Amino acid sequence: MSNRHLLFEIVDALETEGLDRDEYQLQRVIDVEALEQLVDSANDDLEIRFSVGEFRVLVTQSDVRILTNS
Image (cartoon, rainbow, N blue to C red; front, side, top):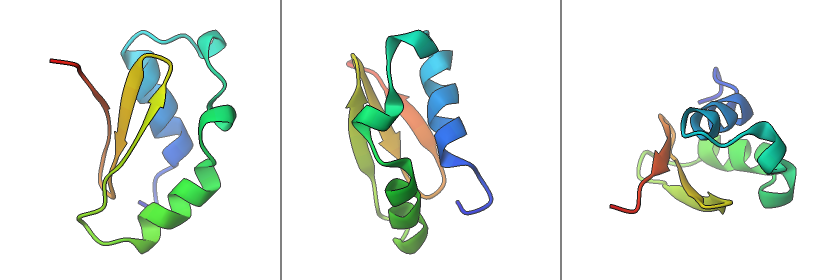
């Protein structure tokens, strides 16, 4: 993941789901630098999940996704 910018991937995933940048302050939810370090140092099995408003975010070494409630 070190070649990607995790912050941009998280923001892009949230905006794709319709969450406007004015509706959240990501820095109040997570420490993106710490998250990047954790993901970069972990094995392929690591999954980190957190909420931003009504959205559940899943971060792995290879992907950032928004989880649905279905």
